[in-house]
Length: 81
Image 1: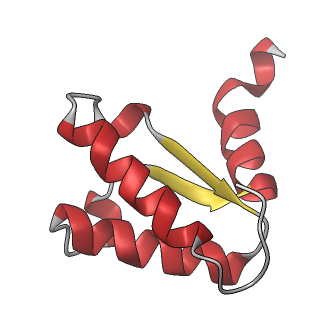
Image 2: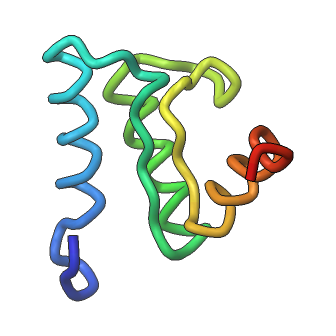
């Protein structure tokens, strides 16, 4: 989603995550990516509220910045790259 500040990007993405999960998608197969740590924290907070998750460790949806998500992938699958 490409739009200016305050236009509802985080809202759109969090509701899309909720929709996907409501349609039967496993939360662990959903990845949300943003540019800033601030946006990632806000998105994580909203998704947790939407799903009724209390702790970050219980959230199986991957939420993070491009760099954060990529480092997770490299740490898990780096030897295969």
